[in-house]
Length: 303
Image (cartoon, rainbow, N blue to C red; front, side, top):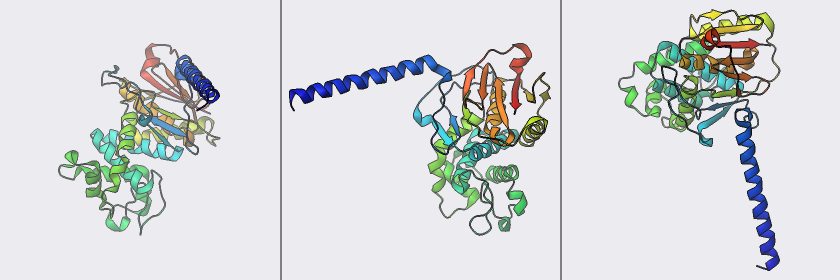
């Protein structure tokens, strides 16, 4: 290697180090305002690397890493949020959420398919001919998720099985090991969508046809279909819905569900616990709420 070549390599190395340091400084300064970088065709990121909260609403730890995020499109994240909400409403253990999400990943890629192998339909590719319900029923994500949980909870000892074995006991698939490959993604989504992580679902929203009071009505109806009889409140000068909560974990369950369903319900802003998500930014930033009642509500504003 010539002296000139060594000199060029030293200069290039120095430039790389300076550039890397510049990026580091930029990230530190931007903090929460740094937008999520999404892969092409993916509108959402579900991240399990934020501080978790316990039942009392206090932070219990932090973690980070590129491998703690899952990229999905709007339909996938909305279906994952509904599957999780149905399970949480039933009070199933968190492992059941993981099994359900891994199953839907394998069977449909979290898409509500109109068909499949033989007469299979929906998120879990359930077959009406095998007693899962009518075609119309299994095509409903809420019905399908409920049916899956009912079948899973009947499996003796499912809690101690590998995820793929528990799923196989329900699905009777020709590929019994296939569910295991979705475990990592499903654990991340279950943690985020069950409120164990904060500010953990971030989505960008493209043009939506849902606007105004009708959008607010359908949003409220969707919330109650997934979550049951949720207490709501009016918010002055806002078209949308405010959901009352008693603890932080429940608030993040609702907040993440609202972001996950933002595309199909025309949600443009969600605020909870001094954090705000907007459709324009696609991510969460810190804001100052007006204390008191505001801290006990998850507020969603529609276009």
